[in-house]
Image (tube, rainbow, N blue to C red; front, side, top):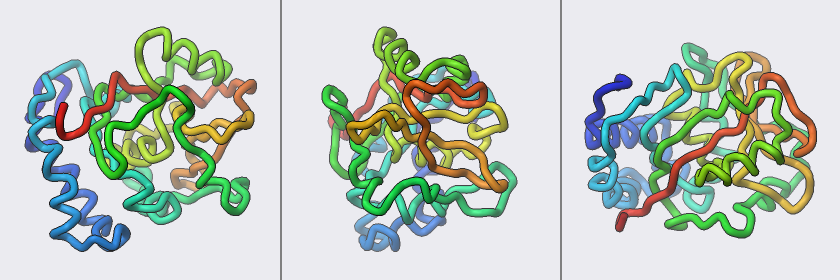
Amino acid sequence: MTETALDGGAEFDRQVRTLIDLGYPAVSGLGPERFGALVAPLRARAAAVPAGPYGPESGRVPFLLVVTRGVAPIEETMPLTALHGGRLPGFVDRSFEPGALERFVPPEGLELPAPDAYLLLGVERGEEFCGVVPQDAVRTVAERGRTPLTIEEGIALVTQFPQVLAKNKCFSLGGSRCGDRRVPALWISKRAPKLGWCWEGNPHTWLGMASAGSRAGAGG
């Protein structure tokens, strides 16, 4: 995929193959046939995504196929990620106390189009927010009519485009909150992707705020 041309149908098929090759059908307990049937209705919407100034190296991609934790648990999908050119599996930081991940859900006002799988459109890594307080970054994202990414969406981004997660260009996931001051984030640790969290009032020079233009289910 380049920054000037996009075959949405072919890119959707690539993303599905990536998930199948990584073992998502087994992780979900659905098997290849049922997993394929789950995501297949989204292909037509993906095929309609227009070409645009997108490129993984610049931190922007046209769409992502997102499979939610209700189908594939975060604890099992995070280890299926890896850095670009790397082999070490991603991991969940131990700072998440037992049961914490289940409490990080979309805040009020952030609606998902489908409970199991959907498309995330117009994705940006958000390195412009490096050094910005996360709560301020989320506010700016909302003012632009965009939406912060959830944990599952962040994992989908690194799974499909591992080159997006780069040194000094990591990102917070303000679309998943648990009612306290913690904001989940993906960064690099021990030569692998790590899902951790940072305080909403603490800026980091290497941590931006990922966002998207919209979400879409099979119907639009």
